[in-house]
Length: 109
Length: 116
Image 1 (tube, chains in turn orange, brown):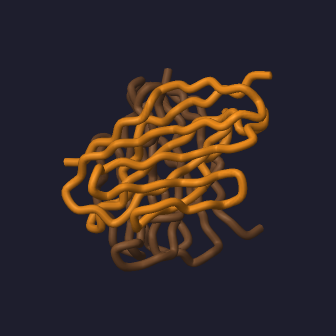
Image 2 (cartoon, helix red, strand yellow):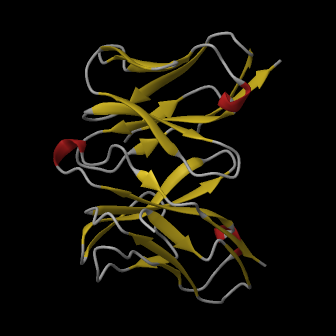
C-alpha cells in the first residue's frame, strides 16, 4: 500500500519562509506532486518532482529525496493569500495519485 | 467555456435516493477521476477512467457507480444515498499518458452534497 505523512497545520508570519514536509511509503515511485487548495476552492497543481533535488517556481520551491522517501514544499516571502491547504501526492506508476491528508497553512500578520 | 465543469454545485437529497453528479471537460483529456473530500481524510479517490468505456475502482468505490461513454463526460451516481456520503465531490482530468499519467490533474469546482 501507499501512505503519506504531512503535518496537519502550520502557522507562519507574513514575509517569512515556511517548509511543509511530506514523507511517503509506496511500492514503486515515479514522482511527488504538490497541490494548493484555498478554502471553498478546488485543488490546483503547484509542482512535480521526479528526480532528487530542488525545483523552483517563483516564490515556491519543491524538494525531493528519493532515498529518504521525503519531500518538502518551500514557500518564501509569504503572503496572506498563501493561506490555504497544501497536499502532497505520490505517483507510483500503475495507480492514480495518492494524496496526503493536507497541511493547513495559516499566514498571520 | 473551456475547462472542467461540475453540476450541480450544491445538492441536498434524502437517504435512499439516487443522485447523479455530472462532470464535463473540454480538453479531451484521456484520464478522468472522481474524489471525495472530507475533513481529516484529504482527497480520496472513488473511481477513475483511462479512456471512454474504461473505468476502475479507487480507494472508496462502495456505493458509487460511474460510466464513461464519451471522453468528455464522467458522471458519478450514488445508487442509494447514505448520510456517510455527505461530502464535497471533485472531478479531475489529466492528459498525460505513461508512468507520469496521473500528474498535473485539473480539478473541477466541486459539488457539495448533503444527504439528509
